[in-house]
Image (tube, rainbow over all chains, first blue to last red; front, side):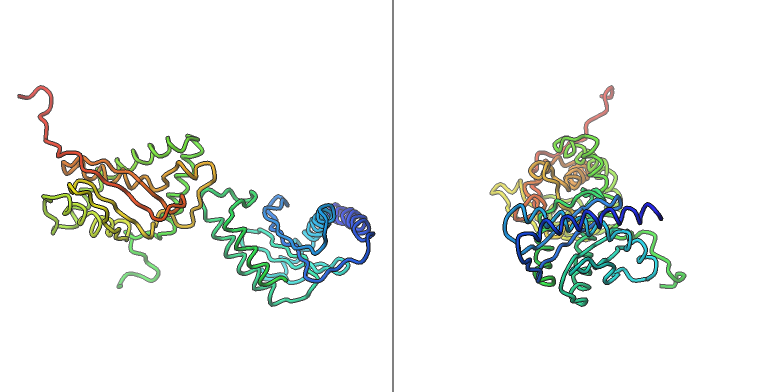
Length: 168
Length: 181
C-alpha cells in the first residue's frame, strides 16, 4: 500500500545516511560480513547474530543499526514474495548497495533474514534449513513464549556454529 | 491391522502431544503459582491422585504380578513393568542402602522432558517431572506401602542424571473405620 511504500522510502533514506556516516572513515571491507535476524509477527527481532570485520564499538553499533534498517526495509518485499511461491526459502528478495538480502519464511510466518555480500545460494539455503530445525526445537519448549526474544544459550551456540560453517 | 485406513488405536496417543501437554501444564502452573517450590508440591499432589487410580489399572493388566514381599521385588516390578507400561521406559535401579530400605531410580530418557529447557529463574528449584514421584507414592500407598519419593537430580537442571530416590517408611495396616470395634 501507500504507507508501505512511504515507509520503505523513509527507511532507505535513513539507511543512506547511516551508510555515509560509517563509510566516512576510509575503505570498508565487506567480504565475509553477514547479519542474520529472526523477525517475529510484530516485526520485532527475536534473535540477531552478525559478523562485522570493522573495529571499534561505535562502528559495530552503526553497522548493527544499518543492518536493522536494511532488514526492516526488506520486510515489505518479503511480504510480497512469500505469496508467490510454495517454498519457504525465498532466495534474494532485495539488494542494497553491495548487500543481498535473502529470506526464509517459516510455516508459522516467522521470517529469517540474512544480509550478505557473497552470493552463495546453496550455503544459505542449508543454513536456513538447519536454523529452522533449531528454531522448531526452541518453539517446542513449553517455557518459550512465541514471538519473544530467544534467550537460550544452547540455541545461540548452535547458531553461532552454523554461521561460522555456512556464512563466512 | 484390519481397521479402516488411517485409523489409530484409540488407546495410543502421540508421545509429542503428551510431552507438549505436560509441558504446557507445568508452564501454566509456574505462571499461576510463581514459586517453583509450590509448583513442585502441586505436581506431587497431582501425581498422587493419578497414582491411587493407576495402580488398579496396572494390576488389572498384569495378572502375573503377585503380592511383593520385599522392597527389591517392588522396585523390580515398578521399573520393568510399571514404568514400561505407562511411559515406555525402564529405569535402572541403583544405590541400594545396606539395610535395603532405600534405592534410586535412574531415568535415561525422560519422555516428559523432550524439548524442555528450564527458564533461568527456576533452574535450581523446579523438579520438572515431579509428577512421577507423586504417582509412585500414590500407587504404592494403595498396596499398603508407605514410601517417601523425591528427585535428587535432573538432567534439565544440569545434573549428571535424572534420579529419583525412594525410601521405604512402613507397611500400612488396614485400620478399622472410626466407630467400629
